[in-house]
Image (tube, rainbow, N blue to C red; front, side, top):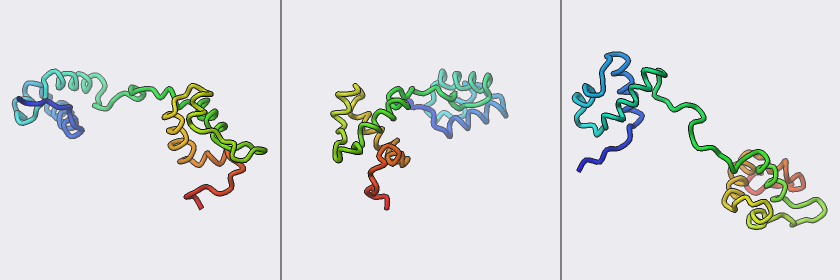
Length: 136
């Protein structure tokens, strides 16, 4: 049984070159590259895309939308994750933020790790925290 996989980036470049320079069709490509496990329909779809758009790249914005990491959620988590000015050590845990905001705990952790901490924006939300661990 032959397992047919997705087209790699090199396969896409090869098909694009053969289509634009030699005007080959899917049957010719499959005949010449019989060692590849390409499906004819996949090659036909890619050829159609090459002919209409001139590229093999995906359209910008065609992926899955990031609905949880919005600006409002980032701001909300940033405010809740830090200690208050008059109450030291009063920050909220990811579980408490989850209960308060209905943003999942994993998303809260992801926002803190990938958005607030990495970009240094945690300083913006935590002005009373002077020394950040690992950033001296």
